[in-house]
Image 1 (cartoon, helix red, strand yellow):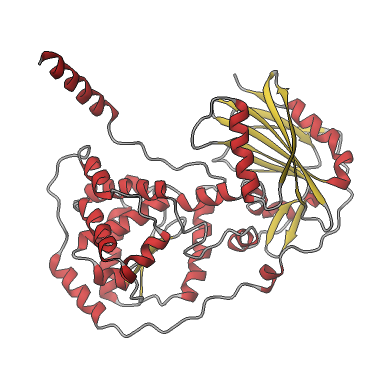
Image 2 (cartoon, rainbow, N blue to C red):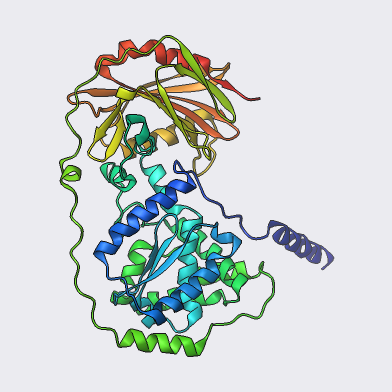
Length: 454
């Protein structure tokens, strides 16, 4: 008996010590400011396709819930906006950086204000955890930095257009709005914490999702098509509630909610809006761009990151993000414009890769990154690999081939990786095959110049 009691005591102590799971944004090539810019551009496009309601009572109801939740520290301080869409399907969505939308079908289907708050909190959590741009970053790790660095080519176009050129879509099945099961689980947990903080009963979130799942058919189809069910939501949220401060929860203002549902029931059907057509440039794909004569300067300039330094030709340009350790470095003519997007035709991408799990060795971590590159770059092939050293540390080099943005060219991509405490440090050296010889000295100098902070 004593031994059993001791084991239970130890297990209980471990559970308390573990506490609630830490939730934070994952790997991301976008800055928070770029999330906000992308969200504004995407909202303008979305509102061409849906019917946003200008009804004082409905708007005030959704804004009151949203702004209360957005004021919690867990919401991340983004400039959230909350609007109502006249659509009978049960759905809600939020764009990177804060624009959030609630369908009238969701208001009609909920049993109480807290269930609406649960869905809104869930959507705010997707924004705060940066799930949309995290997925976009993982989907196109190689060419995305160029799309975000339009200034290198002397022009700053639409960010949304640049992403569309890379196949990163806005639709409900697109990268920015279709989340993984693990992202859904994290949004549930963070949303539950926000609900509890402002007094809503967190269990109402899982009850509403369970209701949609049980009713099936068209009622839950729209929401679950872009929000895959992570499974056992109730158990996960109940477990989360154990770690929250004890409080008297509410399901919201019943009188106000009843009025809102009456307003929704009396709304006329929304006019059918045509989906926005893709621009002619977007449908035509990449422009036909001849290969420039790139001859890098032999003089080098140093870039100092937070944990590494690297030298590069002094006639090349560096674009970096103050919130990121990654950079894009390329000659001006190395950035190829295609419609409103940009692609790197010659230059380098430097950053840190954070695999879902740290692998046992450098080779396995590198292979994880290579799989990601190959999956997000159709036609890319591995052409060989070898072990090398960088700054006297074990390193791995993988040679890749893909289609160049320059017309009629094969692209040679050389990936160099080093395992570091911050993640897998990588450099991708990019060159059209016909200009590889003229770029090789610059690339060799860059790799030889890398120094890590101890």
